[in-house]
Length: 105
Image (cartoon, rainbow, N blue to C red; front, side):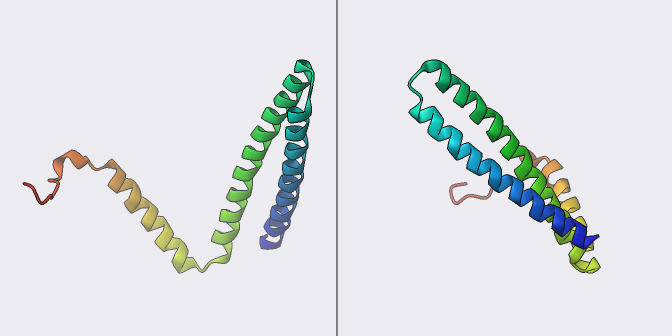
């Protein structure tokens, strides 16, 4: 299972690298385009590529996190769950009720 995730991660990183190469190519075409129609087309291609890169980057991060979680010891996993629960509780607290300590008052 861990090996499969590692293989998937390396494949995703390879695809991400290829998308970055394509992005540079289309950026160059957009800058060098003389006709406005070609420039618009290159900019549209850039927009699509940037969206793909963003989605793929998010997917790579998810796989990295799942791989890190599956390889770390179970006691650390429990700590992470508790830490995230505490963090959620803290964000839900009404901070207006807490006095702000300052040197002036």
